[in-house]
Image 1 (cartoon, protein in one colour):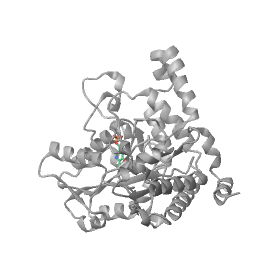
Image 2 (cartoon, rainbow, N blue to C red):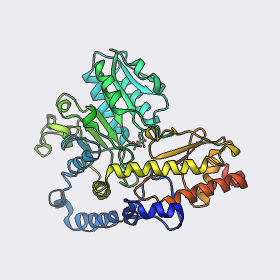
Image 3 (cartoon, helix red, strand yellow):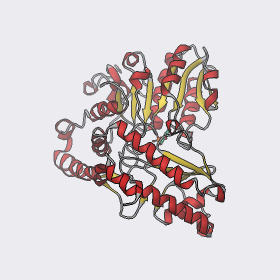
Image 4 (cartoon, rainbow, N blue to C red):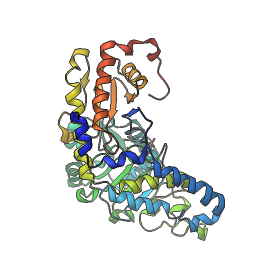
Length: 408
Ligand SMILES: *Cc1c(COP(=O)(O)O)cnc(C)c1O
């Protein structure tokens, strides 16, 4: 038995692999961008479409629990992020939820002008922040600084510290707890984007006393392409915040059809309109599986997988002018390894043609994700070997890899 086969045989998470549809022969290192399909989701979607929609029709809003899906799934996600029931809810997209919570937070902190964020934050996060400060006006502005300058820029003018916990490019983890308390010391709120965190690294919003958070479910949480996102609002803040898109689903009594808006108590006030039920149910079956996962086992395996990959590729990267862009210290690294190379896009395409699927991020990053729930140690070793052969044969120089596709 090879060393990696022995590691697979001892892996406490190995049983999860068979609960996903992963095409045979494919080494899928892009679960950080679109998580694979849980088998249970196929049945759940079939049931939703054929029975709940097909037969139940409008009655399914009550009988099949559609009306409570946002809260029900939100409560389940709460358990994955260290929140209490009633503190998280599923709705809209990550971008829209960022807008809703950032705007609400800025209105609460109306005597402060600055949204403090990090350079290199996910683009949508920065676009949304610019949009929110423009609408609210009053000298408000977004200040994006290098990660190691965040603490130094926290002062009495910061309304919200607005951060993504795990860097989408490099996988670098920010210290959620210490940044949250530093923000609180100057009276700022914190809004965390957990898109690359939940399902990848342990998150405990409650222990950190975090104020606000959002996150994506189609990456590590296997919710399906474009699955609805979630938002979190610490309980004692909920009644003090106003949803800037106050739709009927966030009303205290949606079916009273009142002409006057009265926000629901609790986190439900952050809903706007009707949720996409087929997608919600698909998401729920992914989340149900996630609730069975031991987060400590997950983290230990994530570190072991990324350590193994780094150890294997370190023997040849220098030779081909490729560098590791992720933190080498596993405590500061999420579930991915980013590799820098001037022709990273072409290397990525050549790897995909050999059945190793990663992705490319501007300007020069080959990004490989190592979700521990279904990835095997043997696949990590095979992926490293393919990378070496693509670099050694210069297979990536093939002209067909030079044209960019719409999605990289
Ligand atoms: C994936 C991701 C998003 C995605 O936002 P959508 O609204 O779902 O397109 C936002 N922020 C971060 C940090 C992400 O990683």
